[in-house]
Image (cartoon, rainbow, N blue to C red; front, side, top):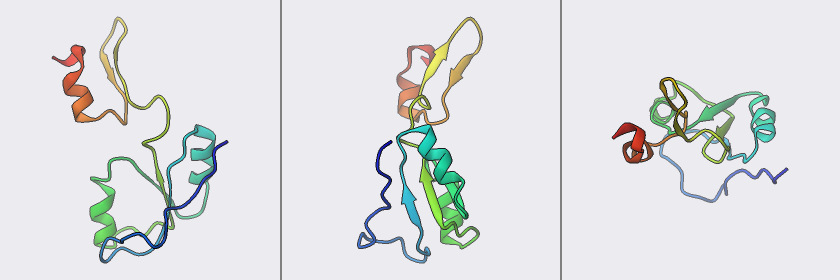
Length: 100
């Protein structure tokens, strides 16, 4: 299991956002362990969560970034509909031969 380290607390902050611990697990076991912590919240792309953080609509104690988890970024087609992984970027989607 890889070491889980929060970001450096001396790093620049987003104005108006309260302090929280930030983790980017590399295994599903780490992710589930972190998400079981009190006040944990998932962050993927941030388009939903960051505005909520800025207006204090949510105040998580722990943020768990899903970007480093395996098997969440894909575009496949197996004799059925095209399947798109939760962490697939727009660029990956646009460059996929299945979506051209």
